[in-house]
Image (cartoon, rainbow, N blue to C red; front, side, top):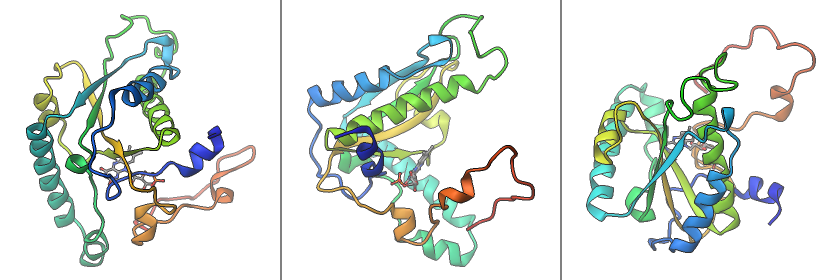
Length: 213
Ligand SMILES: Cc1cc2nc3c(=O)[nH]c(=O)nc-3n(C[C@H](O)[C@H](O)[C@H](O)COP(=O)(O)O)c2cc1C
């Protein structure tokens, strides 16, 4: 699979996990792709905690269910109805969670490139996740990013120290298929903007304010 094909086929997966545990060889190849990402000052500030204990997966799934209910309660009625059929996680079905963390102390105090833009640390971790996601797609493995959690809960669940940020829980596992259209588009939550709306020449356009839909 070439890189454009992987980019186009990549999907956020929730319902399509086959219920089997990913084999270690493929898991390590995918993590090796993540670990090959670029990073500010070459700090490689990420770590990956692989979680496969069914009890831990169940505890996290329950917490995520509570966070989903909090979000649903915050919505107006019509948006609540749109959210209802959308699954926001595949924690137990995927059989494997990869918790991705960011350690801002990695590399010491003089980080080349982060002295002006602090977010570059977090951005480096996001690039590692994208590498992981694309490599997984090429390996026929599904990934679903879960951010419906409270950071202190997940930190305690997998023993992450105070100074390290928890960036993501990734559900990782073999799939029956990949959807061709993202769930949020299929269920009418939000569509992809046309490329022409996102590309600008010379200047950022004025007056573009975000909306609920
Ligand atoms: C930072 C980030 C956080 C996300 N959090 C969630 C989440 O908590 N639950 C969920 O179902 N999807 C989550 N997603 C997946 C997005 O909904 C999905 O990427 C988007 O709808 C586009 O679909 P696609 O990835 O299949 O192209 C997240 C994606 C990103 C990049």
